[in-house]
Length: 138
Ligand code: ATP
Ligand code: MG
Image (cartoon, rainbow, N blue to C red):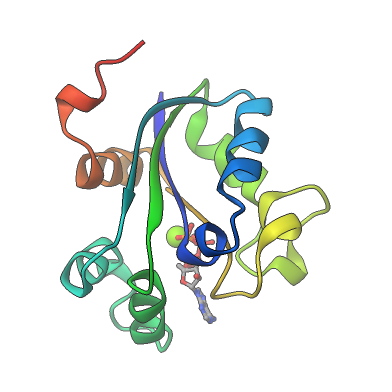
């Protein structure tokens, strides 16, 4: 199955893209589609629509539009839950040792990577970034 990851603007800016991709590939994920994108405000608002009422919504949109981010469609067995495990808790201070956020995140907001949180959201989020013709690979 597929899930959606985004290597966030903090990690791209800090030149951690390669290290994070290597970590995910070593954990068993296969890259099925990838694109570097600088999201518009409207796109980031739409992507994070479920968080619109949260106090962190506006700063989150500002951060996610602050520079290029790398969208990835990743495949493996049980991809959604396994990716959540390997990225770690939202706040790197609470993330387990060896997780992507513990290793590479700056803070709870600038936390290096996004991962879909359910199979339904994974399908929506993969479709948000990628067209069917980009997912035919392998
Ligand atoms: P993501 O959706 O990016 O994979 P997540 O599922 O761990 O992260 P969510 O609760 O969906 O966390 O929040 C989305 C994003 O909003 C977080 O990754 C983080 O960047 C930001 N965020 C969440 N909670 C806070 C907070 N209390 N303060 C600042 N930023 C926050
Ligand atoms: Mg989330």
